[in-house]
Length: 235
Ligand code: URA
Image 1 (cartoon, rainbow, N blue to C red):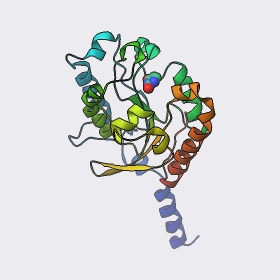
Image 2 (image 1 turned 120 degrees about the vertical axis):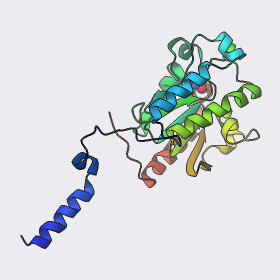
Image 3 (image 1 turned 30 degrees about the vertical axis):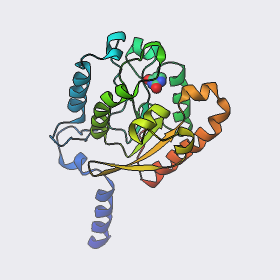
Image 4 (image 1 turned 90 degrees about the horizontal axis):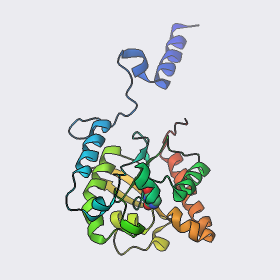
């Protein structure tokens, strides 16, 4: 084979593989996100969790058993945001582990996603007593934590589950039935994030006939993942 041919093939080959494998001895960091202070996402997430745990005079925290921070993969490009923990989540300390969580898992599976390739959190991190909705004041109080959470994870796509997540991130006057099924692009610290509001799985359990609309939203997310060239790692 002529040298030029060989060289072209080699260049093609090297451009297809990750240079870190060849040139670096250090372990590859799968969660490459660094925040503007140069902290890794793991460190920043620990700091954020600590900050939330130190919240004072909070009715939600007073009545809850556990801080419910997040679940999933901090390196994920798809982030799911629910409303707030329920009784099961409060017991276990993880979001979406009850019946609504089982439905959420099925919804994610239907577009080839699961908890190893998405990141899941809520608008409020402590269970509202009697599973009531968080008040506007509570949403406002937890919003800076949620924004920090988003800035650490740096997702390309966010799925908002239900009206609380919708009003926290898109606007109080929005209605989920009108806002769902459309992309709402938002820029967070110079990064554009495509946001898809959809129905909360707990609502879908009460009104299963709405599942066909949720399926449309999920397919839009699946298409956006493809369009943005997001690689979904399967466990
Ligand atoms: N509903 C939510 O919004 N979040 C959870 O974590 C569980 C149920």
